[in-house]
Image (tube, rainbow, N blue to C red; front, side, top):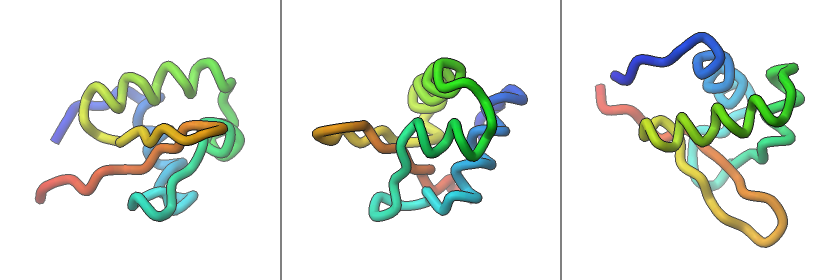
Length: 74
């Protein structure tokens, strides 16, 4: 399991609450920012960090990129 700082934990929790847990239910940074009640810039930086750590996956789309949580090995 990867160590997450408090803001990363908050973002992952918000994504779980939004149901962004598989590639068929991806959410945008706007969705995540609204749910977590954090500024979009902070959310974007945190999403980049989480992608680099392999916790979430970014899906490039025409308008806005989407994100979902990767299933962690137990």
